[in-house]
Image (cartoon, rainbow, N blue to C red; front, side, top):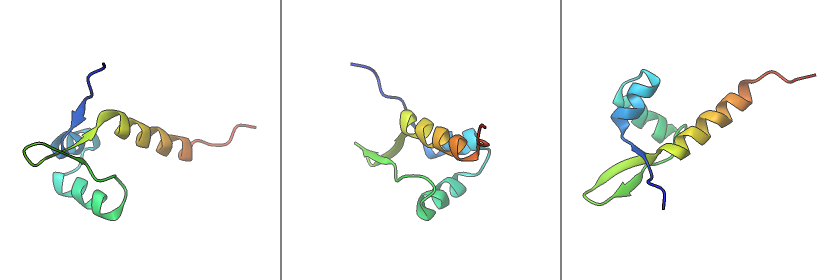
Length: 66
């Protein structure tokens, strides 16, 4: 079984060059999904989910190939 990698709000803030507060604002605004709740009231996002979101965003901004 593969190990799942999780990212914290701080990890995402660093990844995108924003504040942790902005990450939570993006969640509230629907730009990011709600994180998974892990034991100990810890909230994290799966790296693969974040990578899928990033790929979808790149696909939307790519020019059409003719």
